[in-house]
Image (cartoon, rainbow, N blue to C red; front, side, top):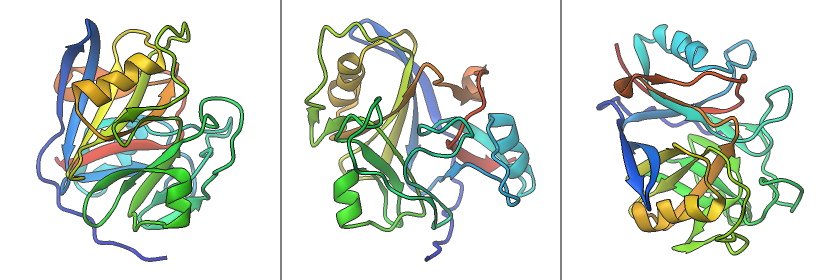
Length: 236
């Protein structure tokens, strides 16, 4: 596998609380060129599982976490359900078949940190023409697909949870990481990305276990141990 040079840290994530359609959300905006990574296990293969453990790993580099959230579904042993790439190395393979649960609600997708920008790519398209990704995580369902909401979403669905996900700007230079402040359904969450943030493609990360680390807002959520984690590293 190839390895790509890490981009330099530029600034901390711009995290803020917003409201859209009278619902509260927290968004963290990351610009391409910042040191955004996916974390899962240490050099011994031990799953990190928490924001604190990720921060410990970064301390050895003279860095710290500026922002982080859970970034993909995982099995009981915290192994990723779908594709995971860290530092250019594939750690778990892509899954393109339909299945039970939100992950299998096709189309699902992959968030990719590549050499030229960020991307959210539908999983089967990703498998057919794999882009270069220094980091990538698969989850599902897609929230927004080429400017349209996932076709299975229902505006009046009563399936409501605290949810988190990521959307990428049309030019691939900005990634918006979002967690809902209240329980919302998929249709409501998808509209936040499509209409509130105006991104053409967005991906659901998870619900119920969704958590955010945003020290600039005085926030560090606790809960179950996590699988993949996305985080921004900055100099201490």
